[in-house]
Length: 523
Ligand SMILES: Cc1cc2nc3c(=O)[nH]c(=O)nc-3n(C[C@H](O)[C@H](O)[C@H](O)COP(=O)(O)O)c2cc1C
Image (cartoon, rainbow, N blue to C red; front, top):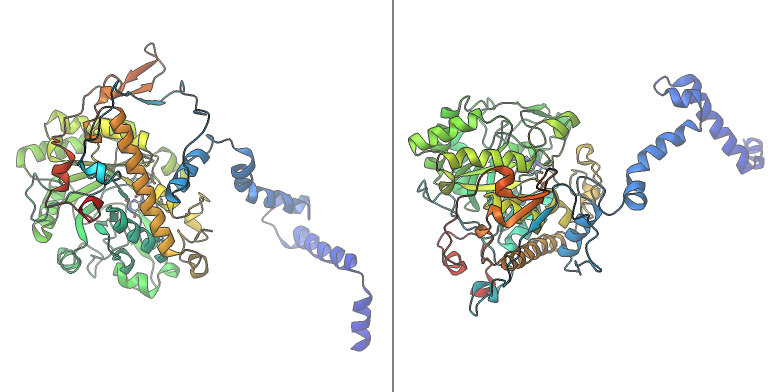
């Protein structure tokens, strides 16, 4: 034995390296049949796979220019990071954007900006910007709700996000007066950290499902009664990244905790079908909305990505005829994010936000229904200028998903579907989650929302208005590639939005249904 160890000790380090490479070469040539490149070019072939794996990071850090990347370019990400950290989020020397580029947005400023009077709510709190409409007011729901923030956290479930991320987001919305949409995974303990909540369910009915996997109204009623933080219910019909696509939650991902929150069995794959079992026609959808509203007292809305309009028209016709229907509609753009979707869906199914929303809004406007609905938009709208365009088109509130993730540290690694999110946000890996400091990240989300609202208000004032609900289609221009070169939204999309009845910010402060408890002027 000693002589063998003495012999091993005499072998130089480079001989070990050659020996190891020899083993890799034998494996590449004789033992594996899956990679042609490594078979044909043993050892060096591995370099190709390694370079391919670090390519996205290399491009992000060294190659791509400031405005080049998608879904969010470096300037957009940096603006969110700086806003969330309360750092300097300005840019010097002037814009680095090609402002003649196709679809570039211009907001028309007024000669004299809106002057905020003394004792105005925004003199006391420059970030106070609630929704100008009350959700559920028209339908006289028992518990109407006015979101205290025009920017809110979009549907993302506990399951697709980590417990630490959900906790940070909920504490963040509590600090900024916004609401937190649960996403499809049910109401977890991490959603109950003080923020207003919109309870969202899809075809899996997680958290409100019966033993057969169908929808249970009784469960929803007890859930909302036991959790007064729930201010509204959202039925998911589709989302921009994967409309009409079901999903499987693999047994391996179902921990005891997730099983309990979602109301599913441990050890069995769980199917989210492509379609709902609780209704199969538009009249049945309206019936369900009314049953939920009646049973819970809460406003009820629907979320959808826009494609064909025939069933939306049927919905609008029935709403007009019966006086019933959703209190709010969340319109998600085809550019929307997801935890996981096939690229063929994410890239091609459903319309981009501006095309989808403009066609949908007209359906409701033609039937004189826009005033009774609250329109919520999502799809890369978490930037003040984009939001101004959305408000001019008829939106009353926006939801943000990936922007909220970035405010708590997401680096756009785009690996949400692998459970290996390096920032601990979109993973169930306990080690990776431990890197998240919940109090710090809660502050960051709150700060991003407040900075967003402050800048959005400043843009609104520059255009001569007190509240962004006053933006009209003629206030915003986009570059178009035809003889006009640029045109206002009214001409581009062929409608003018219905005026939102707004009688001053003070009325919103005084509203009994105002959610969140954050207006610093009252403290
Ligand atoms: C990680 C993740 C999980 C999501 N989960 C849901 C979901 O459960 N239900 C849903 O309707 N949308 C879900 N979405 C879509 C978002 O709610 C949102 O509609 C979309 O990302 C557009 O907003 P954004 O551009 O601000 O990200 C998810 C998005 C992400 C990034």
